[in-house]
Structures are given as C-alpha cells and as structure tokens.
Length: 397
Image 1 (cartoon, rainbow, N blue to C red):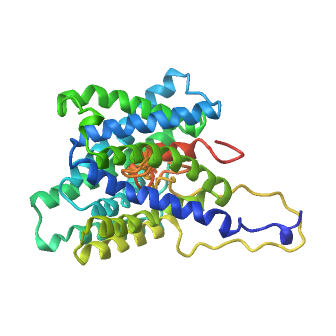
Image 2: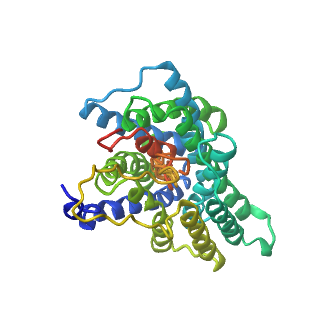
Image 3: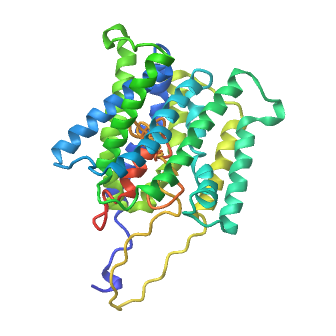
C-alpha cells in the first residue's frame, strides 16, 4: 500500500458521535455528584458509585471472558492507584460540590494535566520538562489563579470547596504517573486493571465509610433522583463510558481520543447552567480557557505539524502517536469520573470526574479523568489504566 492510498486518519463521522457522547457523559458526572451529595455524605456517595462501577465492569469482564490480575505485585500497586485515582478524588469532589457549583468542579477537573507533568518530571521521572511544557504549565497555573479570583481575597466555604476540587485533580496527578511507572506494561488488559482498581477502592471505602460518615442508608431510603444519579455515575459513567472510550482509541487513535478532556468542562458548565440554574463569575470561565490553553501548549496540541507523506513510496505503517501526557489529561482522568473524576470509572479519569476512574482517566504518558472519575473528568486513573495498558489498541492493550 502506498502513501497516497493510505488514509491519514479515520473519517470524523466514525468517531465523532462517540467522542461527543463520552464528553457529555463525563461532563454530566458533576451534575450527578451535586444531586447525590444532597442526601448522601460524600464518602457514602463515593462508596455507592464505586460499587456500581465495579459491578458494571465485572459484568463486562465476564461477557468479554477477560479476567482480573493474578499477580500480588500488580494488586499492591493498584491499591495505591485505587486510593489516589478513585477513592480520595471522588470523595473530594463530593465534599467540594457541597460548597461550589457543579460547573466549577468540572472546570477544576481540567487542571489535572498541569499537576501530572511536574510530578512526572520531578518524582516519577517518566517525562522530561521542555521549554514548551514549562510555558504551558505557567499559563495553566495563571489560569488557576484567575479561576480562584485571588484579587478578590481568599477564604470562606466557596474557596474551600474550590481547593477540595483542586485537591481531587491533584490526586489524579499522583495516580496517573504512578500507574505509568509501576503498572503500565503489565500483561493485563485495561478493562482488567480498571475493574481491579474499582474493587480495591470499594474495599477501601467500605472500611472507611462507617467511621467517617456512618453506615450508608439503604437505597429504599433515598429519593429516586439520588438513586438514579448513583447508578448513572457508576454504570453509565464507568461501564458504558469505558466501552465508548476504548472504541474512540481504536478508531481515532490515542492522541485524538485524549482531547475529550477539552470538552468535559464545556459540558459540565452547560449542564450545570441548564439543569441546576448555576451561574459563574466572569473570571471563572476566562480562567478555564487559560487553563485549557496551557494544557494544549504543554501537550503540543497547538502548532503540531503532521509529516508530509511521500507520494508513491511504500512504507510500513506507523503506530498512532501516544499523547505527550497520559490520556488522563485524565481522566481520567477523566477523568473519569464517572470513571474519572469526577469523570472516570465510577469515573472518572474516568473517568470521568468525578466521572470516572471518573473515567476512567496515564495512557501512554504522564499527563494524564481519567482520565475517574473520576469521576470526571480529565481521565481518572481508571480510565487511564485502560489506555495505559493498551486496551483498545490492537498492538497492545
């Protein structure tokens, strides 16, 4: 096959619907978290959503005849990833959304790549700091200051809530490069690793929840809206979003699939405004745009040049380039969760954000709902596990 007959990329129509659907699922995770914490303690909400996500992925695992990891070493490392990529960030997003708007939580989820990079460079040694990345980091953290509105003074419950959401994103910043350093490269599929993370996180939360928040209420004691939100965060934000994300990676490539992180805060803002009537101060969306600009610069999205094919020359096909940062830019990342972060597996990466191990959300590199979801978001560590281990890529995961 010659270069002139080889398509540069899959037709947009083959992956765009799934791409938009994934962003909508992980972006809506922050809405469901907001609804959930109205009746549930944040830790209880996280427990329920993670259990729902774990059950969903175990069912998918059984249907696909895949299996959970068997090596104690892998389970040991996944215990760390489950804590920092699922249990803690999902809970922090819940605490945060008791104090701030759901749309603002979605914006904070997008800062995950800015935290991943310095940790990947300085702590885990999985990335190198270049001038371009340094400029991107500088822009990103300028955006963080604008979102916070530091010129108006700091303090109060609203400021505390924003710090909690930022702390959730920071957890993904630890989980994603850790996973790349110690888990990526194992022989297990991304689905297997994600399901194992959620199982571990469910166990961690089951131990902690009674001491922190008491025994969770029975589903029959909750309103229909809260029950639906929990099931959506777990089953839809983790299970369905995981399948969609893997298809996006197969069809569009890892680099294109990872750019879903730029749409998640947009959907979070739109859904929060329409469904909850939330409003933002002028500097918060402006700061979000600066953050996304910084992420784009750091990841090389802006100004990226495509090689020009040599017509008529036979050449072996090259694998799709992985993103400079893990797909968690993730979850994640997602983000997911909500596999991420709020967008990652149970979200949230991420997947989700709160969407996912929101999202599901470390694939290929350290920058990350998620991509959990957390839930949400950026990809969460669960989502990023799928990409990192090569799930969905014919040559690897």
